[in-house]
Structure formats: C-alpha cells, structure tokens
Image (cartoon, rainbow, N blue to C red):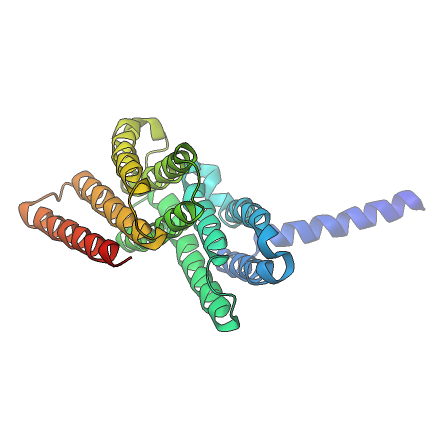
Length: 276
C-alpha cells in the first residue's frame, strides 16, 4: 500500500516538474520578473539593512531563473557569459535599493525600473544565445538594450561602492571585479565567443584604465553619485569604442562623437565637483 502511494506521489510530482520546465519561454520570463521584483520590493521592509544578504541571494537566484528559462537553448550552445549581466544587474539594483529614500512611491519606481530592465535583459540574453547558433534580425536591438542595462548596472555599482567609503584597496578590488565582469559581458555581446580567453587582454586593458581612474577619484573630494556618473561615462566611451571596433565601424565621424561625449562628461564632472 505504501509502495503504491509512493509511486503515485512520485508520478504526480514528476508531472509537475515537467510542467515547470515545459511552459513557454515568455511565461518563464514573466514568472522570473514577478517573483524577483516582489522579493526586491519587500526586502527592505522585512530585512532592513540586513537586506544586503538578500541582495546577494537574489543575485544568485536570478541566474537560477535564467538557467531555468533558457535551459533548452543552452544545451546546444552553452555560454557562461550569459549569466554575468543578470547577476550584476540584480545585485546592483538590490544594493542601490537601500540607498534611495524609504518612500513608498520611490520603492514602486525603483522596483518598476528593475522589473522592466530585467524583462528586457532576459529577452536580450535569449537572443544572444540563439544568435550564436544562427543569425537573427533582433541581434542589434538586443545589443543596444543590453548595453543600456549594463550602463545602469555600472552606475549603481559604482555609486554603492564609493558610498560605502571603504579602504582604498577594498574599493579598487570591488571596482575591478564588477568592471571586469561587465566589460567581459559587453565584449561578448559583439563576439559571441564561448571562450572568454580570446578577448581577455582587451578586457583587462579596459578594466585597468578604469581602475586607474577610480584610484584618482578615491582621493577626489566629491559625491559618490558624481564619481559613479564619471566612471559610467568612462565605461561607455571605452567599451563603446571597443564594440564599434569589433563591428568594423570605427570611422572618423564615430570617433568624434565619443570625443564630444568625453568632453561633456569631463565638464559635468568638474562643474558638479566644484559645487559639492
């Protein structure tokens, strides 16, 4: 009797598991966004400042959901880089979440921004995996969306790290860590190479430049927000030029656009640093 009951229970449990893995991909994305957004929204109310542990847990949970959603596509073409940006985007939003004012509408706005960005990111990562197998028309749009989410993640992470006022070596370690990961992912979106070692020298060169500037900014008397904006602008320029170079579109007119962006970023930094 007990054996028969166990077999029936296992059969039903197996059907439920199969159902979870066989639901359409878009529905998986929606479930992922809803669950993670709700956890993010209630993390501050339930856990207070201890929510930093929830931020770490939420980040790894994001990658588990990503694997669940695109598992079938990864079977044919596994690229570990696909997990980088979802993890850091969630981590950045969750950590920055505790820096914004504890107001209901602010929390709603932040959670909505996270949900919108996460859903767009999931669609983009899925396109990258599929594009590495066959060419699809949405690749260019996915790269644009991914880069915007990357810039937002970078700004949040830089803001949080410098807002903590940590030791210079700890600060530079964190800057190196999230810069390396986000640069690596940004380069991968234009090469779609499984082996990240193929572009490791180029990635390290960009990251070293960013860390050197971060070293100078650590001594600069200004707010973490201004530092975060400046580093994000630097990230945009260095990575943007690299992506255009990989696409073989590095023309004179394009270079002048980035030069003007660099000038504007520098002037904004100097202006607001003087006022702070």
